[in-house]
Length: 368
Ligand SMILES: [Zn+2]
Ligand SMILES: [Zn+2]
Image 1 (cartoon, rainbow, N blue to C red):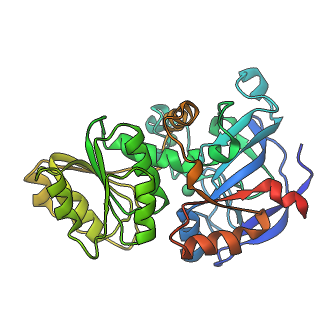
Image 2 (image 1 turned 60 degrees about the horizontal axis):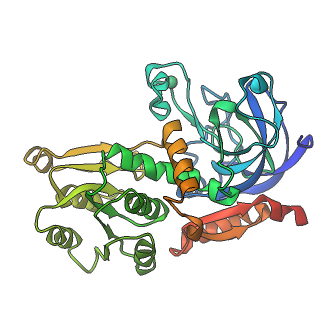
């Protein structure tokens, strides 16, 4: 069991985080208490902290599903061990004290058509997320609804399991594209999500994966992830090179992980007739990109978006990590202590293009 008070990394709506003593709430029915092992820092955290609040809700406007507001304990990519069970969890039989788990962070109503069909991120209500709308994993302990908890296979270490969350985002984007083994793909932008999308495509049998990325360091990461070729969109005509590499035909799918007008145009133009284009990047709500409708109609291309992921994606990702179909150990680029989350975590991720996944190792904090 957790102590009554813990030190957690909180966000108050200013561009910083602070380590603060917070009470641990009583476990509610259907929840488990997780002793956090590792928590990843992500581009969404950067958006929230430097440009937010965006997902977190402000005082006076509590989240409709969680009733919570800022300040928020951040952290939505985490793994750990179950240390206590709320009422009704034991009888369900899936989780016990000592279970090694990772978290599916989407909080949805679990009652609308979308939720009943397993499309929890597409819920009719305003969805919430652990780490924004409820306390997350940048803390030694966190209470999580059992419906948001997945058991990690025995042979998957907990540091790797913390990457199951962003990997599921990538997995879902590939699933939304309708990708089939043997197809060709173009990934635009090779930040952390682009890198994971590339690795998922390679692991799932793409015949070629082309990447467009202006940073040379990140083009090297694309190569490490198995990209067939990585182009510099500032120096080269990346779309022209993709078309050339596919014999003029165009790729079967394009996944935009950058989210600019230029990458959106490139994603559309690089695909074949009836090609599929998926937007996985986050856009500022004020930005309204243009889509060349003739480029869609004239070739019957399909443009869609990918939103978070669902339980099935995370189950498939955990199975792929367990079988060795996907390896991500080499994409953990830093391990830091909880107290270093801002200075050595967010600040470094913001400035250093060589970072893929920075993990907060909660066991490092024990030295304090
Ligand atoms: Zn994330
Ligand atoms: Zn719902």
